[in-house]
Amino acid sequence: MKAFIKNISYYLPSRTLTNEELVTEFPEWSVEKVTDKIGIKERHIAAAEETAGDMAVKAAENLFKDHSIDRNTIDFILLCTQSPDYFLPTTACLVQDKLGIPTSAGALDFNLGCSGYIYGLSLAKGLLFAGVAKNVLLITSETYSKYIHKEDKSNRSIFGDGATASLISNEGFAEIGDFVLGTDGRGANNLIVKTGCARSPVAVNETNSDEGGYLQSADNLYMNGSEIFNFTLDAVPNLVNLTIEKNNIQKSDIKLFVFHQANKFMLNTLRKVCAIGKDNFYINMEDLGNTVSSTIPIALARIKANNEISDGDKLLLAGFGVGYSWGACVLKCQNIL
Image 1 (cartoon, rainbow, N blue to C red):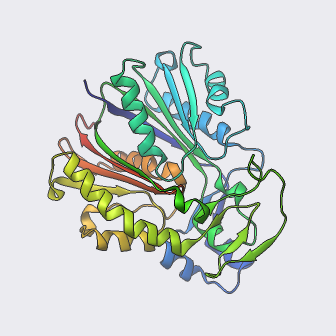
Image 2: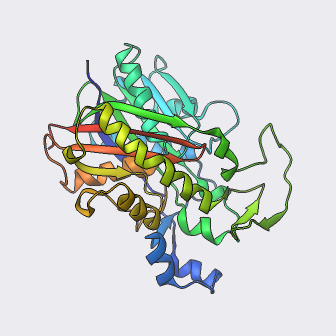
């Protein structure tokens, strides 16, 4: 038995935040500095009342429309989000209802960030192999912008909002190979929103800066950029090597390495450390920003749309970030139309 990515579509909010707008708020920066360092010119921002659930529905509707998919064939929904509509019920249940997917379908959320698409592919493949489902709707949807403090220029320059929808089935354009996954919860405090949930339900309403100069607010998204950078340099090269080994291929067999689109500086550093040629390394985030769990599926959708892959090509996908969490797999392309 085999599992494939059959189709991918995505949704981006209509509102954009450009570097020119950011510089008016933070005049100590320049447009060129932001663009050159992080490789992002603009990012899409969810509307005030637009939730991850809303965006998930729009991405799925795009998938059904773009690829003439009958929603009645969907028998499981996996929704990756760290910004659910409610503590409960599960946002995937709300999405099932809004999409009109049969009540015989299973549905669940899983809370994961930048490695979320990889984990989602592994879960979807498992559902197919176990005979639980035949057509899994894998959705990623994130509204990190709602967690970011308005004075946090670093995170505001990096993150954007977006959602994707993938159909995972027993046929498609990319066969899903073997996975390597990993977790190190010791790094949890380096990328976190501390208040608002059971551990710390009451807002603190205080802000300060950490030793690296990053804005620290318990009520908002906090990212220790230097620690996250060090984590990726430590974890990702080994992740790549283990994934290649597990899939019984050579590094030279990989047509494209598609990493989580974190920021330009981090990606270029990882490319050099992993000894990957520029022509085999995918970077495309200028008009998106870091859309968390949606970066890799958006990249795949664009790669396919731009005819950058052919039958027989192999892609290595790698996600890494919050948790700490990381994961990778290999895709083998076929039936590229």
